[in-house]
Length: 111
Image (cartoon, rainbow, N blue to C red; front, top):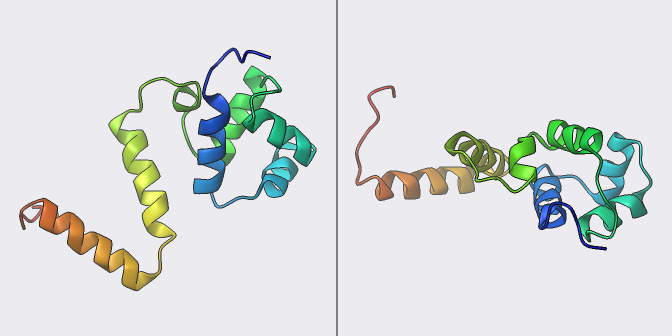
């Protein structure tokens, strides 16, 4: 089956993993059977507009990103923040130091 939104399965899987959810957990939250999540991620089952909105809400991403539209800066920052928050404190501090070094040591006036 050719999906209506090519790549949506990959983006849904990425969003689910970034949310720290297993397929079974996502299925429970969506009120679906786990194999349905597998089929959606493999793009062998279509996703309804309602399911797309529900996935976006559960995974805390935008519907437009799931649909394959260009990611906004806000979406990128939100995803980075989610990944950063899942790190151990030591690793998070290291990432923040790396970011600071990439900024050339400049400090933000809002600090």
